[in-house]
Length: 109
Length: 284
Ligand SMILES: [Fe+2]
Ligand SMILES: [Fe+2]
Image 1 (cartoon, chains in turn purple, brown):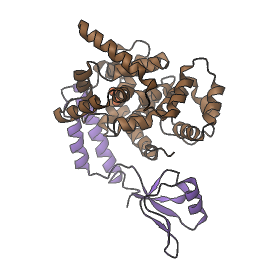
Image 2 (tube, protein in one colour):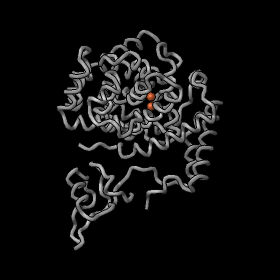
Image 3 (spheres, chains in turn cyan, red):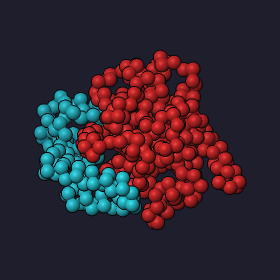
Image 4 (tube, helix red, strand yellow):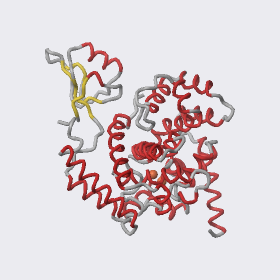
């Protein structure tokens, strides 16, 4: 789930929280799959962003990511090539944590 | 292979090839297949065919502007897409966009796996300076089409194969071989051949787990093979099993990517996948 700028919405995105008018009436219900018409309506109103469901990688800790990596590579580490590939992945994960603390956290609540 | 296995494989092949007539294939796919099957059809005719169907046209534009191809947001019309990508690529892509529902129904996560594999393959193909990276992307998008074929033709048996792979911690290819005596790459190539896909595409699909056997496009086939492994290792989507299968040493050597190159590829994949996220589900 993430706040998403109305300007960038595309049809097919699904609201994870209802959009209300100033008076508190439900304008578009939770779970609605947005159509072109919905988006145009939102754009004419003074609403900057809405909550939408995004298929994003759940934010995981470095340890969780490494544990999953171990599990996925469990059956192929006989191969020297796979050992090397795994090592590259581990370094990649480490680097992504060093760069932004928590990858993928930028847009989520 | 003994005699009875050859007979079995032959029977399997003719069953798989009959899939075009299955009622479970969405009507839009059936129409597309008719268009794809006609080798004489021109770019212009395909363009007007696509443009006449708004759902299809919007899907095509969504795909060509997706991170699969790396032209993001710059292609505004179907005709422009056809000119930029060429007929063969668009044929494969049309097939890809039309099978995504079937893909998702066959195996939850297979669409994401295929999409991620296509993004990865495009990135590696560009890095390796392959002449038509889009062709490799299309092959990667469709590489596991044999899983869809097996599911469509043998839904119950294929569900059993999947359950087995899960319970016994088998690679999907091994579980498939135990049941059908071949794994999904061969049915994938049969169906691609039957539907008149370009022969390079058939080769990449057919040998994506044995890239060392590819004769015409060995580098491209090695790229699809490695992309499948990388995207599984990345944990994106689901391909039928939980484990990354080993890379073919010859393919790794052929591509000869340094650790630094591999890392920069992984970085580009992360970016491509973030942009691919809203693309995982289509709107009607
Ligand atoms: Fe495969
Ligand atoms: Fe695959």
